[in-house]
Image (cartoon, rainbow, N blue to C red; front, side):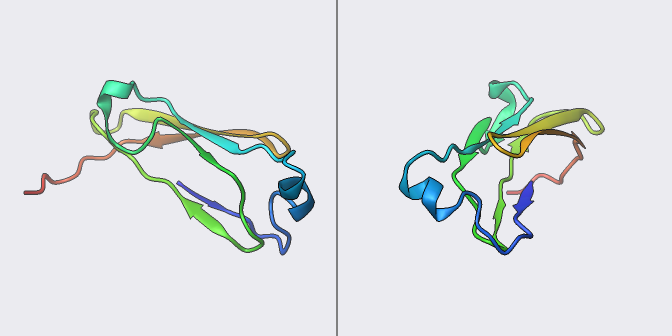
Length: 93
């Protein structure tokens, strides 16, 4: 999952950050904890600079074409849920 701030202004503003009123965006993966091989089920990002980007990734156990949902909740920008079909990957090792 990539989150991008296409604005010139940072999220949150320097004032919000300095006054400690800024809250993080929360990212939640809808997969049971025991099926997550790598990555956090619930993660936070505290901000993005203007033009900045952050990337989160997960490795999960599941069936091909099973759908996982990722929900991003931001205190100012709202909530968005994305459905992601799982895909098979070749084993490594």
